[in-house]
Length: 236
Image 1 (cartoon, helix red, strand yellow):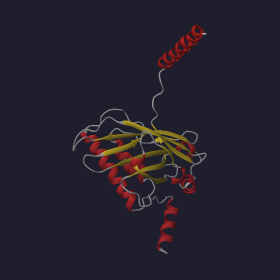
Image 2 (cartoon, rainbow, N blue to C red; image 1 turned 135 degrees about the vertical axis):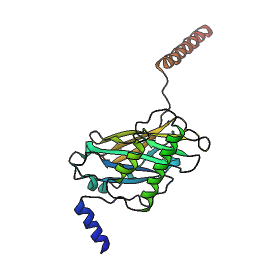
Image 3 (tube, helix red, strand yellow; image 1 turned 90 degrees about the vertical axis):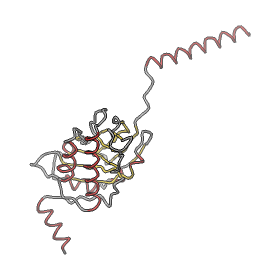
Image 4 (cartoon, rainbow, N blue to C red; image 1 turned 45 degrees about the vertical axis):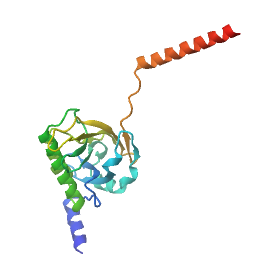
């Protein structure tokens, strides 16, 4: 009865209860938030994508089944412009010292200082612990955790455009306790399509050969064919 009362109260207040289904603090969390502002329903939806160890530069992951798309639709149905107002952010930290931090969004490839790195690690860990233990009220994903992360100069959220979200997952580590973080490394890219209910992660691709390199190999191949044909004519 108390649960029904709580649900009714949340509904009356226009809030959505958010859980991370016993999320582990070693897991990467992906959170969706309504970015439309106070005039729209400030709903959040947070999902557990699994262990951070699976997100590597060589990974190719179909994560669509990680999302309950019905719940997603319910959370943001109050906003008619949800396909352009919803933002997504992914994050994880080890919480240990020395630590590793994963962060999505528009992150610069510079070395985070010791204070910045430790601040990010602490903010992310506190958020992961909170989401893993208790339901979180609507708005807390964006207004508490993400706002705190932004104070360290990082912007982990990317806003949807016509239902499409593409964002990079970055990684920084400490080589020893209390050290600066290493330069942010591009681990790969999340591709989210809210129109087709799909979510995937593709590790950072190996750079394609430069056009000049391709031309060099092509020229070498032509030379090989030329001399091989010439050799055959001499033998004939």
